[in-house]
Amino acid sequence: MKRFAVLLAAVAATAFAACHINLVPETDFTDPKIFDLASPSPVTGLPFVVEVETFSNECSGRFKMIFREDENRISVDEYNRWAMPPAAMLTKYLSARFAAVPGAPGEQPKPVFSLDGSVLTCELNTQKKEVALMVHYFITEPPEDTFKISGTKSYNVPVADDSAESFAAGMHKAAELFADDVVKLLETELKNRPAQKSAQKPL
Figure 1 (cartoon, helix red, strand yellow):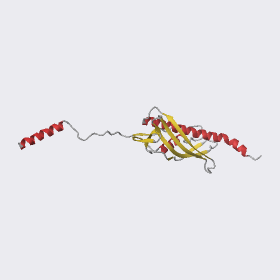
Figure 2 (cartoon, one colour):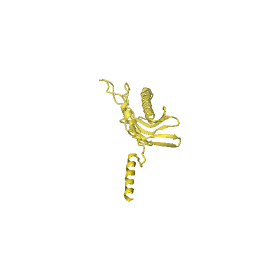
Figure 3 (spheres, helix red, strand yellow):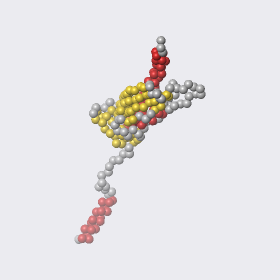
Figure 4 (cartoon, helix red, strand yellow):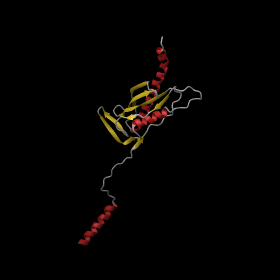
């Protein structure tokens, strides 16, 4: 009887193994996707030079993507991440956009401006389907830094859906819009300088 029980147990174990039954539940694992901003070509023909300093990161999430579900609730995406914090990505993008292009021999030196600031918001609103980027910036003119422009720019870029791919595309567009605004600010400043100098001349 004892031998029969041992034989029965052996047969049952063999059949159990043949069925490939896994008692440990399988868990879904997804490799995180990493996103970055594509580096733009340097903008040419500007009447000034922009030296980009390091922007600081004051928004939530750092490397993780942030999705705003409603006014007071956000979610952190564990599977889709930035290659670096948003402020570092913006710094890299602007550095490429404003990379100094050597002037022609004998050309008059261009005014040099310094640009830095902080990223306050970088998120995708899932209800509105738009990427929100808010940047606080400072523009000075070294070495005296007597000239200064500062302010805050907010951008809301519509996207097709609330996917990580759309988030990255919207962030890239928002960075492009910020760079365009910096150009407009400095072009206006240089345009107004002759009039300012004339107004300062003694009568």
